Image (cartoon, rainbow, N blue to C red; front, side, top):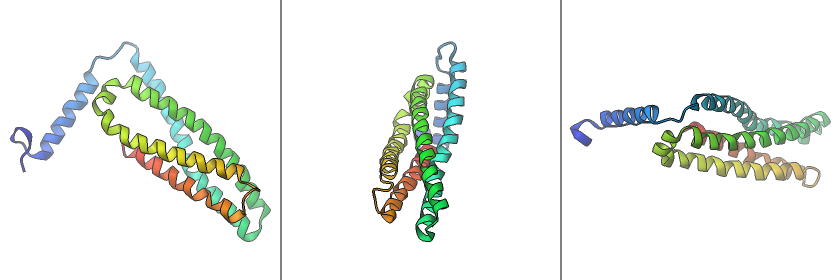
Length: 174
């Protein structure tokens, strides 16, 4: 079980990773990059907050909408309807902040993306796919209110919730 340079495989992997991180950290960087990276940290912080709501809201809306259907409760239906609108606004803001972050990743961390972009690209592509699935079903849910049978309308929340969790998993797995 020996790898490159007759070292154990785990040592080679660790050494390669350490060397790659040093290249990224010590690479040529344009002046004034640190304030831009600090701005990216703020953008990332806000995006994380919005993403947490984006993952949680479909489940919360599902619970209230189901309760409203089963118990014929106007309060639960009102909450589900209001939370759906809030979810749409937060989703739109999260989409904009996520787009900004994708540009910041490429522009502010060129060494990292140049070195590991092929590896990081696949999970981000899956996150983009799940984002579109979530957006499609959010649109169907919002415009289907009072136009679809209540139980079918409720089912539109399931792909939204699954897509949110899958997208989050893809980003966190990076």
